[in-house]
Image (cartoon, rainbow, N blue to C red; front, top):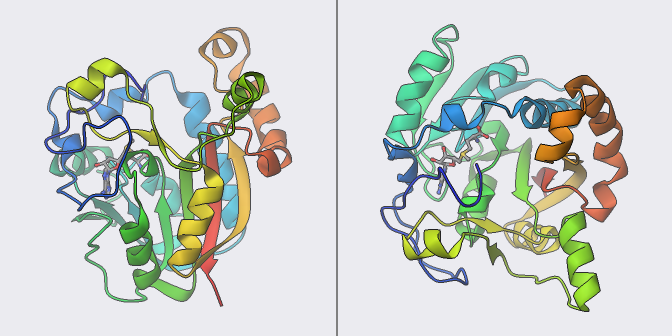
Amino acid sequence: MSKSSSKPRAKSTTSNSKPTSHAKKKADQYNDPSHNYLQYWDGRDYEHAAEEIAIKRLLGAKTFKNAADIGGGYGRLCVMLRKYADKVTLAEPSKQQLDIAKDFLKNYPDVKRLLTQADDLKFKDKSLDLITVIRVMHHLPDPQKEFKEFARVLSDDGIIILEVANYAHGRNRLKHLLKGKKLPAEPVDIRSEVNRSKDEIAFVNHNPKTVQRQLAHAGLKVEKVLSVSNLRSPALKKIAPKGVMLVAERILQPTLARTYFGPSIFFLVKKAK
Ligand SMILES: C[S@@+](CC[C@H](N)C(=O)[O-])C[C@H]1O[C@@H](n2cnc3c(N)ncnc32)[C@H](O)[C@@H]1O
C-alpha cells in the first residue's frame, strides 16, 4: 500500500503526527468499500515473490500442525502456508477482507476464516505452532499488547514470522547521516499531511532494534533476520526483468540483513527460553 494514497480510511485512530500509546480500538479500517486491497497487489509481483522467498527461507523444511496468518487480509499468503501446516487459519479483523477471501480462497476450503484482531486473539493458549504477521506492523504504532497475545497463543516450540515496516532502511540511514541526525528509536508516522488531517489509518515505520526490545519484553526472541524487498523501486521495476530482480533479491536477503537495508524486515521469532 502506498503511504499517501488508496489506503483504507480510519473509523477511529490517532490523528497525531507522533504515534502515541493508546487503548486499542476496533481494527476494522480495511472494511472501507472504496479501498480494494486485492487490486493494490496489481504490479507488485516482485514484492509478493520477495516475501514468499523470505517466508520459505525462514521456514525451511519445517512443518506445522496449526498455523495462523494474523492480519492476513484476503489470504494472499495462506495458499503457500497450506504447504507447511496441517491447518491454516486466516485471522483478520476486517469482515470485508474475509469476504474477499471467501472467493480468493475458494479452491482452498480447508483454510479457516476467523474474525479476530491481534490484541485480543480468539485462539487458546499455546494453540498455534506457526504465526505469520506480514504487513500489519505498520498499522500498530505500539505493538506491546499484540506481542503479548502472540506469546500467549504460541506453543512452546512454535515460531512467528513477523514482518516489520522498516524506518532504518538504507535510504533513510543515508539521509539521516547526511543531516547528522540519529535514527529515531520510536515509530515514525509516515502518512502524508493530507491523510493525517483526514484521520487515515495509523501508518508507521519502525526501528527494528526497538521492535526487538518490545518482543523481548513480551518474552519473545528474534532468532533470524532477513532484509526483504531490497530492490523495491518503481524505476528499477520498469527496466529490470522480474527474474533478474528475484535472483538478486535471493542473494541480498541474508546479505543485507545485518544492516537492516530493505524497507521490509522479516524476523523469525521464538519464545525466549
Ligand atoms: C496491508 S494489509 C496486509 C494483509 C496481509 N497480511 C498481506 O500481507 O497480504 C494489513 C492488514 O492488517 C489488518 N490489521 C490492521 N490492524 C490490525 C490489528 N490490530 N490486528 C490484526 N490485523 C490488523 C488489516 O485489516 C489488513 O487486512
